[in-house]
Image (cartoon, rainbow, N blue to C red; front, side):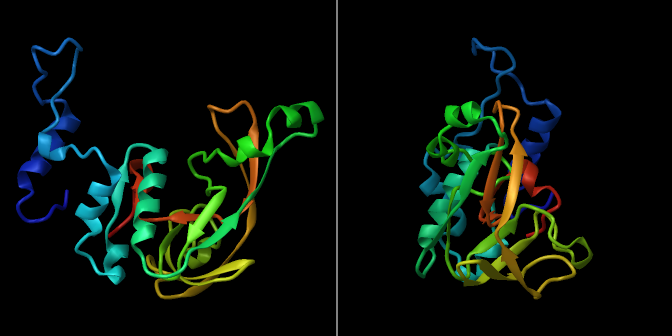
Length: 218
């Protein structure tokens, strides 16, 4: 595990947490509960964004990331970071529907409800971006060119029908690519239907879930 100077104790605590060797609180009414050090608890997203990105230049934002256990937290933190970036926001709205020909089923799930959903692995209905922001690809685009799910890119231009971006990682680093809108379909285990969304297959990459971060280098 790579950590900054002075964070050896935190690294050791994480390893003990993963191995289950941290003592359980005897007075705790719940079984197998461990106490999290007070310095590791942050109750507001704005505070953790300030801690990680507060002293960084905008060009250095791509070298930092905040990991979260849930998709909801990741989306919220990304919005906080976007507000800190210079420039004008461009908003892209998706076209949503459920994957069925049954009119009764379609009427059961209004478009406004579908717009409110952002399953893991899907772009948001309301995608807000700025020039120079860092985004992550959510679908494989060109495997031979190294443009696969999880590839991070810096936005160079925001057009109505495509996003012009520079690849930041892998053997295609530095290459300029166009990202078009595509139709995405995803079956979430918590939803009784398959949602179809036409949107750019990207999301901001300043925060990501722990699972999504596997294989990433910063």
